[in-house]
Image (cartoon, rainbow, N blue to C red; front, top):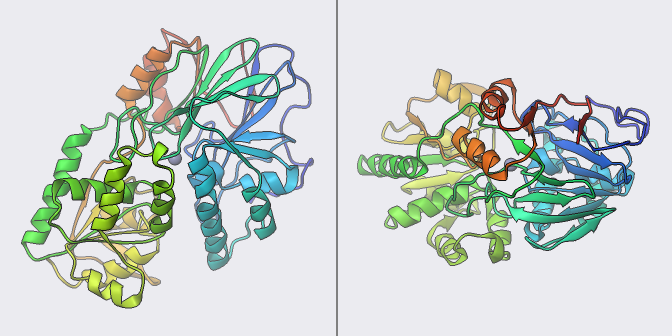
Length: 435
Ligand SMILES: [Zn+2]
């Protein structure tokens, strides 16, 4: 557990930057998630990008942030914004983001706070910090320039999830692009990111070692599997994250098989309402609204029981670590015609991982065998290796800093890009000077 004693534990260098741009990762430099990075140059302009926490149990935090007036939050995933209330409460930092990210922050922070109380782990911030953070947002539309110290910044669409942005920064010396989590491929709810020419590219590398199968084929495979389960008299349970994957799955099903009876249950209900209030961030927003009318939202207990007779149930949590998905899995496991269809990465130690490896799930404290068909689909909203390499080439930078990746993710990217640009593989809490 990191102890937060402001001004005492920050490992950020004391000396001013003499030339070039200093990048100092507090977290997320040599790991996936848990992001926080300070950028600073000789003008004394200092900016923090993202300040998340890794939602492991207990959560993992980035290193303590030095005093900083401005932070840009790229998107509403908790590994990018989970520690922002601490920034506001302790350092008085101003938060910048897209209007949708700012709206979604309330749902994300309240949920993190609630989970910390249920699980009984101490969070580095309290309710008052969160209330202050909700008032600390300055929002910017895609494409609008704004100033941070001596720098000019503007947002570009990042793909990934609605509201996610890449950041273009013009310093007196150079042009920087920070991708955040991104995807150049369109998904049902967002269009893909486009390259921006720059001198320094900070490139996420989550799937740097992976070539994704064509998205259309994975979507077709998912739809046929659901139809097969329904034909044999079963119900397909699709565990999915609240902000992105669940809505993607429902849009695919509505588009390809509108006669299905689909039920949705989870935190995504509030998230989807906020998406619909920000149509500028959504791909074909009318189709999202149609999908939302088409599926049935579960709220009370009797709705839950009705959902058990549906064709498809899409529910949180995406990794079967809790939430209503566990309640449904427990009911559905008694009938062999049913199936569990996983649509995302299942982390080591998660319920979904246990299900894939051993055919078991932790249900209300007991490890229970699940004798159902289990299938996994690749619907990732992160660029894969091909997209990352093509994107980096099109941005044509002098320097590329590959972050948000583990060793397996960043090595292949580094090998492919090394002849064309200077590759930097950051280590958390070690400065990089770019010039
Ligand atoms: Zn993300």
